[in-house]
Image 1 (tube, helix red, strand yellow):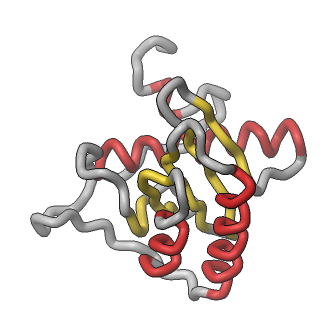
Image 2 (image 1 turned 90 degrees about the vertical axis):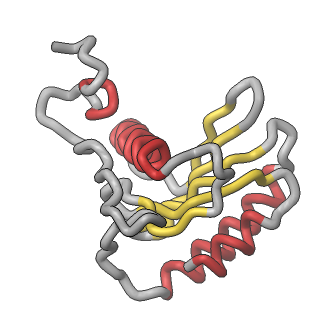
Length: 148
């Protein structure tokens, strides 16, 4: 899985990337070292929740992009996994989309493996927050305490 991720991260304008499962857990990561495992897990869960919202509104989403002043997050679904790329603002989306399509096809052929998240120190990583609840408020926002 890391080989597939490396092929996309090496694309021009890509700063880093990660692969998450259907629950938002990080399966592989080549992100800059300033991001710890807990931050990546929260980001994966939040992006997964946003993807659910888009699917409800549009009927299906394979690729999505979130733009920021200093960068972009580009996500690509590959069955039960999602590729998440951290990119520079001026990344060539056409070239990146080709790389993501190739990587997604390769990932779809990989067997489904249930992850056992372990950090570098041998300690278990924090699991991402629960993704869906019946109250309609995304889990990442509920944790803020604003919606109590």
